[in-house]
Amino acid sequence: MLTRALIAMLQRDVHDHVKWPIQLEEFLSLVEAAGLEVIETVLQTRMQKHGGYLFGRGKVAEIAGLVELEDIEVVAVYNVLTSMQKFKLQRKFNVPVLDRYEVVLQVFEQEARDRVSQLQLELATLQKSYPYVKVTESERLLRERPARRGGRGPGEYAYHAQLRGLRKRIAKVTAELVRHREEHQRRMRKRRELGVPMVCLVGCYNAGKTSLFNVLTGADKEVSARPFTTLASKWSMAGNTELFFVDTIGFALDLDPELISAFQLNLDDMRGADIVLLVVDSSDNMQLLQMKMQSSLEILQETGINESRIIVVLNKADIIETEQAEAVIDFIGNTHGLPTVLVSAETESNLDELTKCIQKVFDGVGAIAESTLRE
Image (cartoon, rainbow, N blue to C red; front, side, top):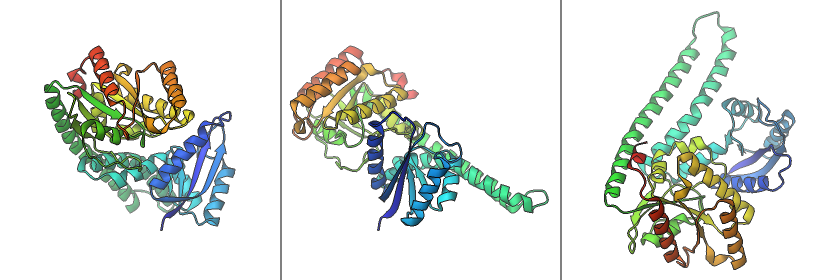
């Protein structure tokens, strides 16, 4: 039986009547992928966040009433919460509260099958939970202190021991990831010694990255409608071209930069690529497509990817009309000025044109600097 969930969102742009429904719909998909059943949805439009609760007190009371009335078991908040906000909301609702960061972590947890993915997921979870533990335990100690006449009680010793334990675990996971990362970079350098251009596929989940990776390389990697099925990068050399392809972790709208930063091995694949293919679902409506493009480009920019190495690949050409394809290509050209190729992984159409575009861009920018692999 699925866990009954309520979705809550604070929308701060009072003039926005277009983006927030798309953001909320995308979040609903993530919540369902995390194994939750959405029973109620609550939206508040408010220009300023409430410092203590994120939402205004009246909206908090409304949500608390719905939690009790509808037997809600989890409240999932679209926005990223501070540790204090999460603590206060849980105290008001008497059920667990997850923000967007934590919902994505739950989805990741279902897909993390290899050791490196599990370590990166654990590090992201520890980094998120550490400040929350500090808040909850310090609040508990504050309530206990009036009953003590001085000195440290057993609760305070336990509090500091718990924090030390978390810091030690973070250090241990980080150290193991450093070893994996060094080995990963060593393998990347050996591939680079072959003199074969490296091409990395990126983009929001469900854009068809893995399907495209399969047809370009002849691989048979799992393809699924579930988000984030690719946590561990997949490498393969194309059978009929002198190119190395790598399929890596998917993006999502408003993905927290701190969450992405925990997956350094995936970021190394992006940084170390000579060419980055930004795969876009061309069948998305124009507003959603624009938002996904912008979100993906921001992540690539924060990762240190130069736009001169980016090619936009419009996938799923087999299910859109010519007019829609032309409109999307014009938008990308006028807005971002990036080379764009329309393909279909399903019908394997226009892949030769994509290969030519990769070679043309590579001839213009050359191989990535070796120092990039040691950042």
